[in-house]
Image 1 (cartoon, rainbow, N blue to C red):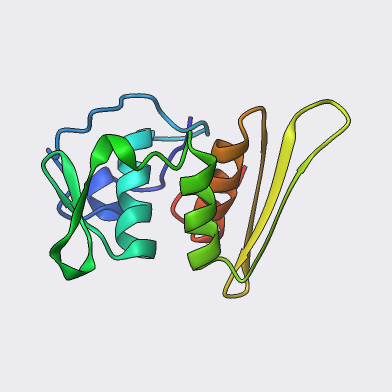
Image 2: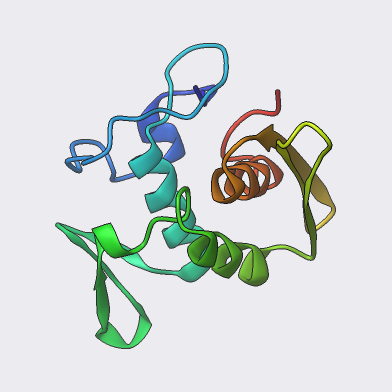
Amino acid sequence: MYTNRGSASSIAPGMKGSGLDSQKQVPGRGQSAIADRQLTDLLAQRILQWKSAPGRYVKQGRSWTPRWKFAPLTSLEDAFLLADRAATNYRLVRNEHGTFEAQVQVAGRSGTAVGKERARVLVLALARALELIPRE
């Protein structure tokens, strides 16, 4: 599971009680874990400048997309959208064991992740580079 070093309200102001519809948690160690939906919300807000609303994300220009449609932890297309917008450099490779390894750089910071799911690995490395979740 992913963990943060503070309370959920210190990482995502205004998200407390937001009705997270995914209770799956990001791996890590330590105090409180961050849910996939909360991480998705943070990435949408910080990288894409989307605002969270009940059941949807409001984009710039007042258009919107349903929450279920933006799934960067499972959709490779959405994961690359985030990486293309935020990363100065990134790399995603499959190793000889069939697992994926990602390295992401954002403004001089780097993040890495390893796992079996391509999109999740890329997004976790990006979140670590942005210091949204701790490095392992």
